[in-house]
Image 1: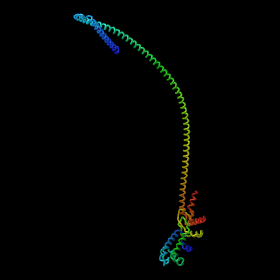
Image 2 (image 1 turned 90 degrees about the horizontal axis):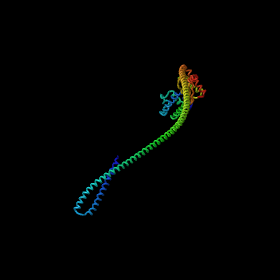
Image 3 (image 1 turned 90 degrees about the vertical axis):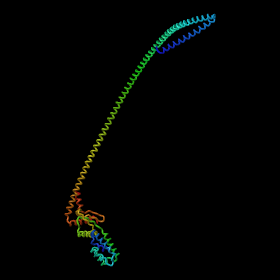
Image 4 (image 1 turned 60 degrees about the vertical axis):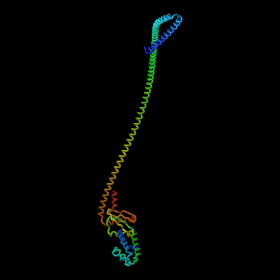
Length: 155
Length: 249
């Protein structure tokens, strides 16, 4: 099941993505117990993001998504729990990152750390360059601001 | 002559007249008894008796007058004598009294003189004793004065000694206080100088910090602007590598 969840949440990289996805899931769950004779993907047309709706439709066709509303609810609940358990990395950087760069960072974590993470990125030009990183209660300043402070402190 | 003496004389005169009148009365009563005896012996005839009576009466009258005269003369004489005697006596008495009085006066004078003498002597003695006492008192006063002067000198010396000691101690204390004050003032000045120096250093540090801060801020802005996106991305990736090395993940 985790593989299915992993695939479903493949596009979720940042905190904003996660919040948006969870919001979409809450909408999905609202439609679980109404008009059950109509497929869920049909019921969700123009209600949620089309990408997600198509994913759900795909799951229906592949019979991965259970047919009963109760089981469907459990499925989405499981998906939600899976997403909430993904560890978060807070990154404070000096520039507005591009999507490519965010993906690059995500890949770096996948390759170097062997972990799926959610990136909580905030932009602060005052740090000049580099990043301030926080992960599971640990925090470190790798910014140029700090380096400059050190340099001027020595002066 | 005093009133008392006059009254004595008058009373004596009245007494004398009373005595004279008594004597006349006695004489008249005796004459009557003698005539009664004669009457017994001469009872002869009425004419005789009448004539006799007449004669006797005449005679008696004459005799009475004579007797009265005589008595009066006698009385007067006697009175004169008496008065003279009385006068003499009185004079004698007066003389005596005068003498007595004179003696009394003399005695009195003597006594007065004695008294005066005694008084004078007593006074003199008293004065002498007083003078003596005065002398003694003066001596004592002089001695007391001397001892007081000595005491005074001693006290003055003592007071002077104490005063000098006190002044010395006060000077010492004063100089100590002044020293401590000057020490305190020196200390305060030194503290003030130190605090001023520290304040100066602090302020200079603050100014330096501020200058550095400004330099850093300006540098940050300049560097931040001059760094391109690829460099930014590289710096972030380097930061991730460093974090990995430091086992943050």
